Amino acid sequence: MFVLDTNVSKLLKKYKLKLEFAPLHCPGLIVHGKNGKPDVIVVNSKLNDDQVENVILHEIGHAKNDGDVLGDYQTNDSARSCSEHGANVFWIHEKIKQYFALGNDLDSANWLNIANALGTTDYFQVQEEIHKYALLEE
Image (cartoon, rainbow, N blue to C red; front, side, top):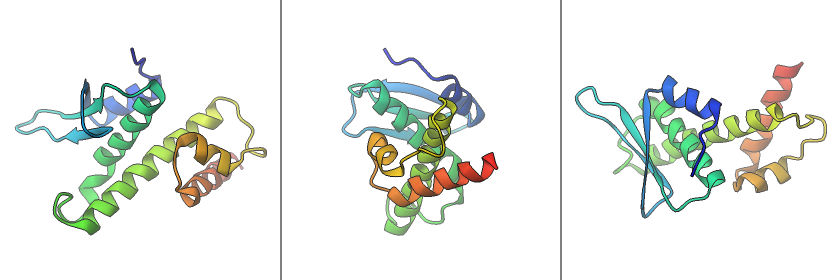
C-alpha cells in the first residue's frame, strides 16, 4: 500500500488533484475533469512505491505546466514534447528538493548517481536542478 508523502499530498491539494490507482497500459496519466470536477491522476496499480511517487510528481508537473503549452498534446508532437519536458522538469525539481531535505550534502552530491537513482537520463536537468538548489543555499 502506497503511503503518500506529506509534500506530495500538499502538491495534490495545491493543484486540486485527486489520486486513483488502476491497472493501466502506461505508468500513469492525468484525466482532466469537466463541468467543475477536479482533474484526476491515475497511477498504474502495479508500480512499486518509488515508481508511484515519481509518476505522481510527473503528472502534477502536467497539471502545473500544461496550461502554458500551445497545441494539442494528442495531435501535435511539439506540444507533446514540450508538455513532457515540463512535467519531467517538475518531477526532477521535486526529487532534488527531497534529496537535500533528507540531509544529503550539497558538496558531495553526484548528479550522475542522483540521475541514475531517479531513473532518468536527463542528466542536464538533474545538474541544473542541483545548481538551482545550490544558489538557493547561498
